Amino acid sequence: MSIFGFKINFTLLLLSLTLLACSAPENPPSVLEEPQESDISRILDSLILEAENRDLYTFKPKLNTLSIIFIDNPLMKTTGQCVKKDRFHKKNIISLNKSNWALLTDSEKEKLLAHEIGHCILNKKDSHGIMAKHGVNKVITDENYKILRTKLFDDFFSNTQESL
Image (cartoon, rainbow, N blue to C red; front, side, top):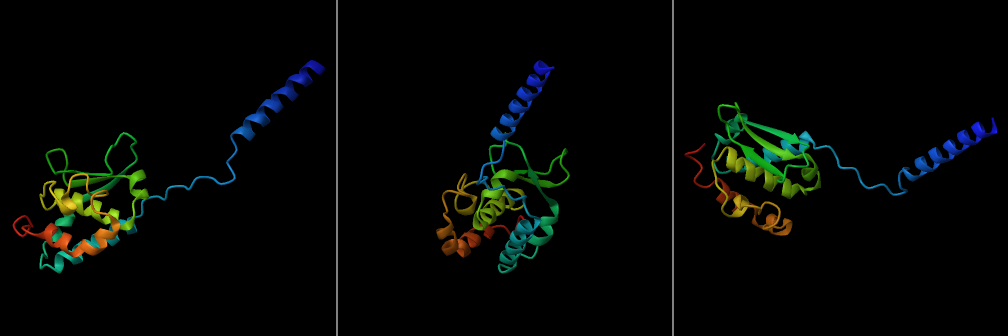
């Protein structure tokens, strides 16, 4: 019985050590917030206002041809991508990497969403400004973005009347 008692005590000791080793640290890392629909709505409202300030009133209805989804896929290498409407997709789709989205600043979120909408709705190619390839987060810093925002959106919405 003492052997059996020893086994139980030894097992409890191992279990206790395992639980202590797996316990949460005193300062746990911050948990990523779930992507908020309010982020998307706020950004879309801002983009609609930018379009309407340029008399592009067909931009808002075009947004109805778009679905925005969050994907939790570690293999997704980009923060966002546009999948154009085709025989397999009834709408244009913007896929956003949920983990990366949570790490972006508000201006980075706006730049990214504008960039992907540029592909999906305005049929723009990667070139410069908001449409710069891989430039959504790196080429235009938050400080420059605040200064250049109007000019960037003038360029973004230029020559789009035909496509809208």
